[in-house]
Structure formats: C-alpha cells, structure tokens
Amino acid sequence: MKLFTNDDIRAIEQHTLQSEAITSMSLVERTGEAVAAEIAARFRPTRRTVVFAGPGNNGADALVTAYYLIQRGFNPVVYLFNIGGNALRNDCKRCRDLLLSKAPGVELNQIVKTFDTPDLGPSDLVVDGLFGSGLREPLSGGFMSLVRYINESGARVVSIDMPSGMFAEWNRQGQERNMVHAHLTLAVQFPRIAFFFADNADVVGTWKVLDIGLSHDAIEKTKTNFHLIEEAEIRSLLHRRKPFCSKADFGSALLVAGRYGMVGASVLAAGGALRSGVGKLTVFGPQCAFPIVQTAVPDALFESDDDKLRITDIRVDHEYKAIGVGPGIGTAEVTVGAVEALFQRSRKPLLIDADALNCIARRPSMLDKIPLLSVITPHAAEFDRIFGEHTTEESRLLKALEVSRYYNILILLKGHYAKLVRPDGKVYINSSGTPAMATAGSGDVLSGIITGLMAQGYKPEVSAIMAAFIHGKAGELAAADNGVFGTQASDIVRAVGPAIESIMTGESNM
Image (cartoon, rainbow, N blue to C red; front, side, top):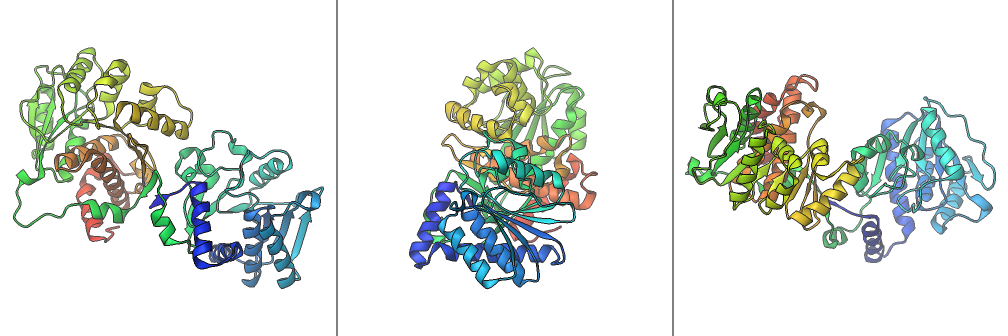
C-alpha cells in the first residue's frame, strides 16, 4: 500500500473532484457518513456524545458526522469554533447551515468569543474534529487548553482523520500533551506516515482507514517514497517451488554466530535460515559451539574457529550465496578485527546484525568498509551506538535515510512497524507482528531468515522486507499457540515454515 504526504493526498482529492465532476462537499459527505457508521458500530446511542468541530475541513467532517449520528439515534452536543464570527471555511459554513436546517433540534453551540468547557468524564464519547491534516503550527492558547482538558477528562475519544494537534508526517515541533489522545483514529482513505512511529502511539490509539472512494487512477499515478508492506505483496514476491528441484536450487548460506555463553543465538539464527528454505547452511563459530549446534540443528554444517571460546578469524573456505554475521559473537577486540577483515574481503552484500553492529560501534571506521547494499538490522539501541543518540523513532528514521544514502547500505530499523530504508530514499514499512515477539533471540531468528532468503537469490532489499513480514507472521502464529506472554524465539522459528505457507496460500492458520 502506498503511503502519501499531505500534499500528495490533496492532489489526489483534486483529481477525484475533477474526474468525477463533483464538489468538495461530496467528499465531506462521504467522510461524515463513514465516520458516523463506524462510531455507531462501536458505541451505543445512549452514550453522551460531544462533537468538537474546528473552522476548517476537519470541522466540516465533524458537522456531517453529527448529522449522521442523529440519524442513527445519537443525540450529540456540538461545539463549533467560529472565533470572531467569520472564521469558518466555506465547506464548514455550508455544513453548519445544513445541520441546522436538516436537524433543527440539534444542540449546536457556536463559539465566537468565550468558551465554557463542558463537563467531560469517562462515560462520555468525544468526536474530535478540531484540526486535521491542514494544521501548520502546533496548537496554542485556548485550543491547546481544550486539548489538554479532553485528554485529562478520561472520555473516549474518536478522532476524524487524525488527532487534533498532530502533524501527518513529522512531529518534531509538537508536544504530545498538546495533541488529542485518541482511543480510535478514523483515517480518511489512507493511514498517515506519523501513525507508524512509536512516538505517536499514545496519540493515535487504534486506527482504521475509511475508504471514501478517491480516484484509483490518481492513487496509482502518484509516486511516493513510503510504502506499507502487506501480505498480498509478499505473496507476489515468493517463488513457488517446482516439482523437480533440489537443495542446489536454493542456495548456500554461511552464518557467523556465537561465542561461549551465547551459542543459543547461533541455534536460533540457524533455525530461521533453515526454516526460510535455504538449500544448505553452514554455521561458523568457536569450537565450544560445535556440539551444541550439531545437536540442536543437525540440518546445518559447522565450521570451527581456531579459538575455543570466541571468533578470532572468519575463514570463508567455500563459495556462499549469502553470509550473515553478528548474532551472539561478542565484541572482543580480536572479534572486532575478524569482522572488519570479513568486510574487507567480501564482494557481495552481507547481512550484518547484533554484535557485528556493536563491533562497528567500537570501531566506526568499519562503516566505510561495509560492502555496498549490505543489510544492517539495528534495534534502537544498536542504531544509536553507531550513529549517535536519538530521543525519538522519527529522528532515528530521518538519520537512517541520511546514512543509508551516504554509505549505500540498506537499514532495517527493527521494532513494531519495522522500516527498511533504501539509499534512494524509499522506506518500506512492515505491517505484520505482535508484542509477543519482544523476547530474547527474536532478532537472531530474523537475521537467519534474511540470510536464508538472500542465499535463495532474492535481492538484499527484497530479502529484508520479505523476512520482516515472514518473521512478524511467524510471531503471530507462535503467539496464537503460546500466548503473548509465553512466546519464545524458538516458537517463532518453528512457525516460520507455516507462516510462509500461510502467506503463499492466502489462508491464515491462526
């Protein structure tokens, strides 16, 4: 699914109006009816409902929503902010007049000067239509105070299109307490880019997209750098296996993983690679890992370092289609040197994760030696160790866009809505996953899946986003069997194969 900026969406709306020969009021009508239907499906009409409508397009949507709520048995109290008496946009003014004429009994309070805040409590429903995507500056003054009061009231809040006070893309200027904290955000036609940052989770709440029939032709033709990856797209990328095939058709991979006390990372990464379908897998690790890997993962070959406890010299004695390095290897100085030497010798993209990233943090000059289009997969702390401290997920993504382009590498920012950043500025956001995956070793499984897919011939960027989705889907299946609290990384490994099968057939096993 394409994700668009505000400017893109405005252009798509204009194309829709022209191609269908309709007015902007038609889109307001569609929006208000869709929002009201969604609210009526979730809340009872007996619940006290308060609608806050701003002077612009978002306010127009709110007024039409109020009308359709009345048609569904609700009795909303409406507050329309018309500060100074002449602040309403044309569509908002029309919607006010239509509401008064079609629902003459409605309690519509126009705020021209002073405003007595209504009493709100946990049993109330608030429909937030103050400010939508047209907002250009953070809220201040009376609107800021109103938003804070709504948040403190404990009322259930439904925001139309997006929570008032939040910007659709970047929110570096805004403070969270000055944004409406919605329990449900009903996005019009598209989710907004800001929805996919952890920083905004408490503001957006649960979100759902309402289709108001914007032009499919305009959507197709509008280019964007942001994409939400969904199951159908992964299904189209997965190669089906022919009846006459052998392990030689599915590549060979090398995983450099493990040290004394961390051989479990080797086992989990190997499991992820093998379950992803790689033809042949070799694990390279210290001698102490040999009996564990050969026992826990007998399907994998094992190549041993000369050292018993840690990796000191990464020998690549065979030709591999893909190499992954990092899970559990530690950051001893000799290991850092071995990873740097691997970077210098490699002529193909690598998968670089976990302690290999921490090795880079210890020796930043290694960044210049990473093979082009390699995939690095940092979680927030690993990213910050290399590229500097960041206080928000948004700022981390902006930095990733910068360094991906500079070093010509692919960066998969791990976490909920994992984001793959390409050197050309494209960002692919993963839609699968579950909080059950917040468990030790989960990232090692992902490393194995990416390496396994790269070995099977998928391009590094395709491997990374496919693996993120498969990994998330496997986590969902594992959680269905073991619960959100009881899921372990080894459960995710076992679910990788069923996840791929589920994606390819389009049938959920949950």
